[in-house]
Image 1 (cartoon, rainbow, N blue to C red):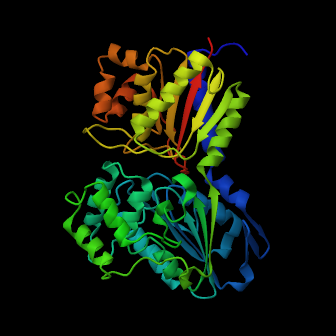
Image 2 (image 1 turned 120 degrees about the vertical axis):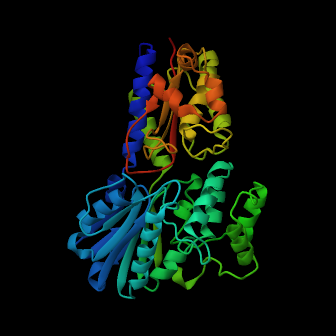
Image 3 (image 1 turned 180 degrees about the vertical axis):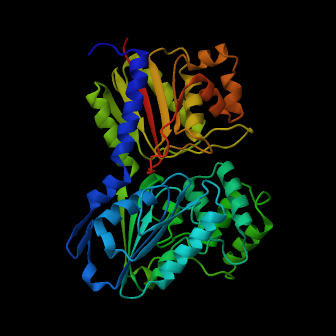
Length: 447
């Protein structure tokens, strides 16, 4: 094929990203794994006879919860008796029976607390002849804030701010969140019991660990209060967390607060769980689109973690290596990775991990005229911004300086958003109503 221009590569990157996101749309995920034939509802390997249930309830939380509920409403119709889901502001879908409460993310707010209380009440109202379908997707942990006894929403908000800025992984953050909650870490399943419970999950965590996704409200929790305290000590954040949070964790570790339900607890005897969409599916769809556009492709991993700017430099180096030696795949090449990196906040700027990734990569590939890097959140939002991420190339850093901006200083200040906004390089998709972590692309041509 003829060499790709820089403009064509940037257009290809956007199209490949879009293909990856569309492959994990909630509607497609639900329709693929759920089928109804009369009174029979098949959910993956699990079969539910709708004729034996008095009531069917739908509850859920996460950025994709409304879109997932919409598809189930189309499938189950008036067989649904009641339902409620909490979603991030703007992540809506047309619903009739299932109610929606919009709430704060990544920092929880009073709307989320109200939604969590109402969802818990619905779960507790379900009887032994009822079926509860629970829809879980990324963002659900922040969108289902119900503080443990003696804690306040303000305590949870303060704890979340500290956790989001200390560099902890999502697994570590959610271990602490589960042990500050009255609904997460399997406690929602305990409320549903003895009704039948089926949970459908769009995974947004590395490794698809069910107990981590949305802090695992309907699955056994293998972590403990002791584990939560160990994470606090590891990141040396005890002095930054509210005193009430530290007291609560210590009280729990001493046996003064009930532990979250563990594997083998009776509340999980009638509970089934199914992952209906994941980052791997997203990466595979992106790979297929890249192949159709003439690129040699390599999926690096769906398990990428670590400090964002460090992971970005590795990706940039691989793009330069393709130009220099044709390894690990020859040009035109498309490297694809997923997962979720973390940002340790050092400055007061505005942005998100994907914009930070793109800016760090732009500095690493500066001068490499035939490399394009895109990093975007599959949910369409990156940090507290209206962008999913950003797209850069070997000329980005120079263009920023020509417009009076110092890209290195913007990176040091965690302030990627205004730089990319001025350059016109933000990746803006709007809410996608799905969330399976991030999708990153490195394109290298052979001009």
